[in-house]
Image (tube, rainbow, N blue to C red):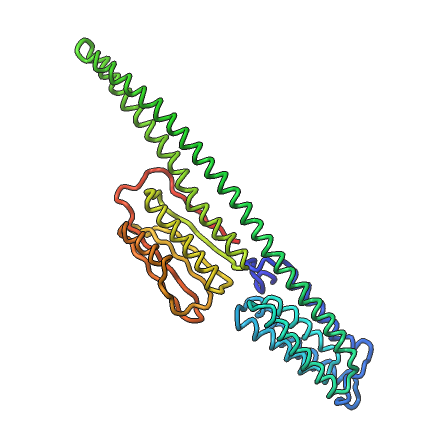
Length: 383
């Protein structure tokens, strides 16, 4: 049930389910027989329980929708929860529980701190006015303000801490990338040593075959066959080493993209299923991926993104999409550079962006007619 209501993308575990336990405060008037308000003549339990149960039935869909919503929809769901508390107040003096939930969700708004505090202040002011009209004790407002602000700042610092942890992971990943760079340099030195040894061996056997050609053709042929065998083995070893270096390029960009987006609370899903590519193709795709993710993090105001890397027979395709604000795209040096890099290899770049529906960038490159033979890079990684 938890997975159906909140997928693992939210990385919240059971916390949202446990937080529903605060709804028990709504039933304290029933348990202790408190008078609901002056607007209910008898103040009895019959006038209290049914509005409370109805409010919970309305609250639960709003509660889970707020976790899934983004941008203006999240703000709307939060305000709807606060309005639910205002509406229940005449029947239940503990309806400030909903107002505290609203303060909690305000910390996750994608707005600045002044806007969040202004919204909380307005909700508390309206709540104080309602308390006055219903002739409730005003100390309830003080309790609500203290608890609501405590929850708000607690969640605010929790989200900030989460962003700092993501930034720390990003720095750790940078260290790993530097280590990978050092490893590639080591592989380059090994390739140099390998080719130096192999080419020396080929040269010696070729000279020997030339000297044996007239007096012992069979031995000369054997040496020529040995030269061919050594050359094929060396080519196979070089291809395996180079494939490892190339695969690390896109793999490093995907890892860096995920950590960069996590810093801003953006969930990234990515899937890679590529055949071996020439170095120029791999560099072009890696640079396009880096530029697209950077633009997404800076301008999209998204909460979810997806990266696909796949081949469809004749082309290799990179797709980067998000659920951000979308809108008109103003071409800049980044997009122009991506387009020029792709067009130089016979590819193309397409960008689709609709206001309120996110942005989708697609880069296509034609596959070379004779791909490099080592095994492809594949896999699916999800947060």
